[in-house]
Image (cartoon, rainbow, N blue to C red; front, side, top):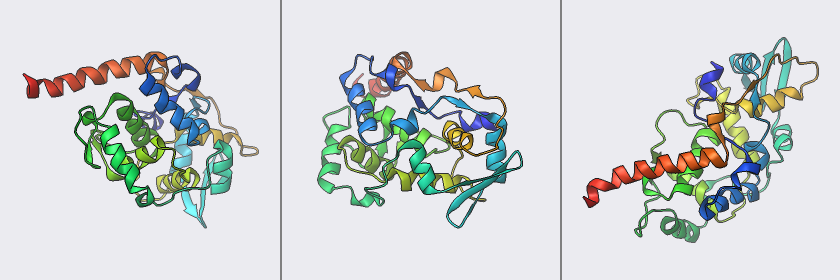
Length: 246
């Protein structure tokens, strides 16, 4: 099970990505730091497979807490403890419809590869490389979407706008909400947060987690993997656009 929890997610090596020679990509990573996501996206890149599997198997939400049992030890995670573990902002937008409309308008012109404005609900291939990667970080790592990542939803477009224009977001509330959905039986929310949950479990007194495993190198965003991703995205975009200009 654990391998499926990390099959699409990204970890960001912030020390490495700033060596990447692309101003747009550098600015995108800088905005992730400014918005308060550095410690969440860049926490230690290891996970505890057996403990993680047990956490989700036994997990539920009770009185607003995420609760589970791992190796016979009760685990309780509150939003406050969750936010403190990753120094997540606790102030800012909770409702994404409150993102200022003028910024959304500006984003529709800033994000696309072409000179045409994009729709709020568009395809990822229509956007510049750095915004495609930002979209993937949101979809795969923060909101852990299952299935195809080709379409940009209105919610993620709003979040991308907020991040890009430094609008304050209550990441504590949003991400803890995702975690609660992950452990809610019957929820359609895909499971994830593999390394972040490991950070939380390490803080539980008396809990033995067993052996850790390194996060796959191909899923860690470094200078090299960003270059590889950009090359791949550029080739894909060219194949997509070529029939239109051939």
